[in-house]
Image (tube, rainbow, N blue to C red):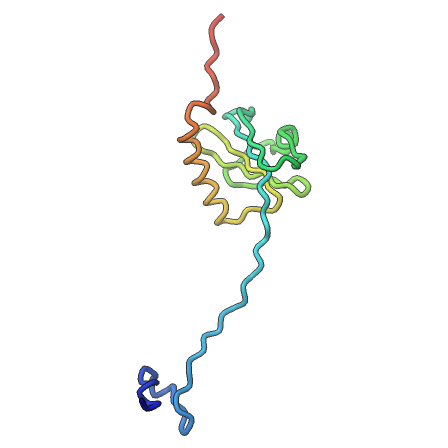
Length: 139
């Protein structure tokens, strides 16, 4: 097989006189470092920011619900808007009438937030009435 048969797919612009075909090179950027995110806790709140449940993902996390309640701004928790407290980040997600507040070390990026929101919406469906506040009984 002749060399011209091997390089048949190259355009004439790719040939340099006397050197044959010159391959096209596409430069890509080096991979960017992605900040590490450690998931610590999940607080499940009702519409009045009262805790319904807590899921501990890391037993060594010193952050408690009191830390979250002291960090809530006067205008309340906004869906997807992170609150920073020392090295921890509280990111609330509203799913129907509940708020899931994810406690992380490191700030979740836009991709992580989309994934977390979808995951929590699916989790609420499966948890069902477990997370709903119990109705008060007349005495």
